[in-house]
Image (cartoon, rainbow, N blue to C red; front, side, top):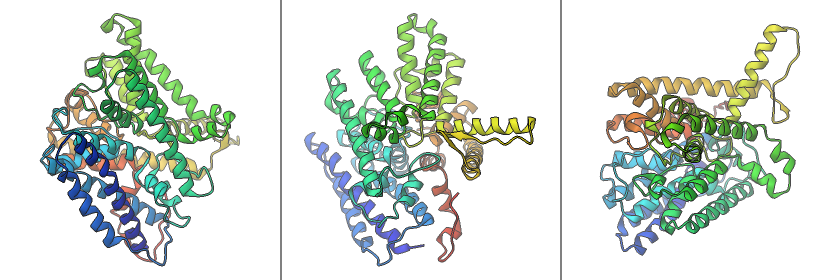
Length: 484
């Protein structure tokens, strides 16, 4: 372990968070609100960053260093990011504020707030801005503005970016990070403009653009997007949620005119097929509720877009929908968006790879001597790639099972318990029953809130960085851990 380099990278992350807090401070200033709730954390972060900020001679970062940096960075960002809510009195209880901040940075959107509209404007802005920062990744953002690892940034990117595999778009990792955030920023600005053209106030447009860009789902309205009752806003936000759920590498292919690579993506085709089938199935199931095919398609499309991309916005209380529709939404919670997007869940790429691997194994049972390979995105998958997907799913299920049993000690009904955990570990936000789109997580105990915060971090960081924090061997000098 290169402890000094880990400290150096963490210092840059703390400085970055201090700089990011200047934006909500500016919003607070514009709305004539108190500045100290933001200035105090900024000062604390700046001092800590200064104490850790000496660059070491040995700047190499390896796999286990990358895991440690990413996990510590996300926990630290959430811990300090909760302070403005406490200091402003928006969320006086620190555990609640920590839960809300973890939910923001991990783009989960689960909330302990029974009402969001009374919050200060600066607090609302910071709450949703955490979505935008966490959507593409805290470390990716830092690498884009402060290149610092002398070519070893791939270990940070692999530990933070969602999906079964991560690669560089160009030769330098810092340039890759800049390209990703450039695309991300432009798409966010386009959505803000379109929402303003739909007569949504600029502040509200920023809040909902941050939420759909990061696929987070925090709103500044108690009724979420449904408060606007606008078909135009529903369509714009629904489309952008789907766009942010696509692998950002594909957008880079469009920019460099590699159109064939874009349209040949198996994951993209599977993603759109799942969305289309779910929208039609739910629209048919809720037709008797809304009485109009167009209205049914409107609400079905928005909610499917929101759930499969793990955003969590709502225009209707789907808790009241028929069981078939709710079951489809729960399945979509587990599937999630595409690898390399801002969405959560298991990821469409893994689902496709698991399905193809299972089909290949069944064929071998019928034809033991046949030679068959599992192909994905036009390439043969190695045994190591298939094994890594199986390992991910196995550990995912183990974490889910243990967390479910611990959460059940709350003695809530099984649907609430199951979907609350599902919503957190898959970074969705709302679940069903008590934690449905009109509910919240306020009734859970402080221990359960910390457990669910851990689950949100586990889900956003693809499990292993958070779990490896508790492995003693990762902190031992001179020992090497093979990356799973």
